[in-house]
Length: 184
Image 1 (cartoon, rainbow, N blue to C red):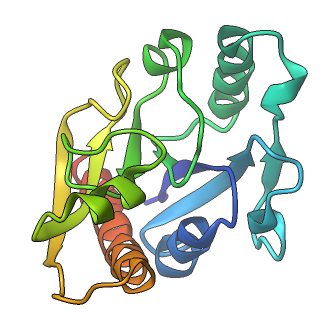
Image 2: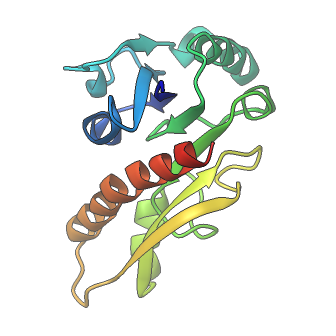
Image 3: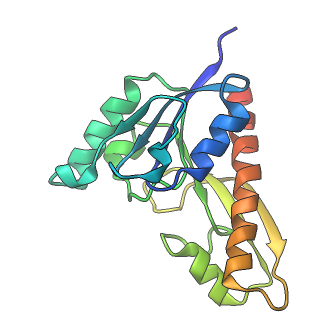
């Protein structure tokens, strides 16, 4: 039986991307490609799979970019697309054509958008965490698939808070991908 295929989208360091490759590639799934919107994304370094760059700055609109992104993704025929630190607001051109999940560093529906870690930290909430959700037309508004949380320490620093978020991400995202692919 052949492995299910995924494509991972990322914008920066690619730590979650590399974690997915380390934990799942070749056993649970085939990571067919990693696509970034930034040519200088550090996550491209040492990538053991195919990497593609599709720079959003080369397009005149979000829709135009998303149209090319959809075309590129579909060329790999993935069973699932995983957004792992892909820092783009997606249009219906993408959301209506690609089955995808997103990793978000807060307990949705709280703290949507790109500053979720800082907002969650500053909130003073006792329980904080992360979410994996289906991508929809609403920013960080798709149905939540899984969440994992931790209790804030009394003298929590932003550094220790960030570290806890990342540790949860490295654990929950691969588990959620495995679960979804098993159910497909």
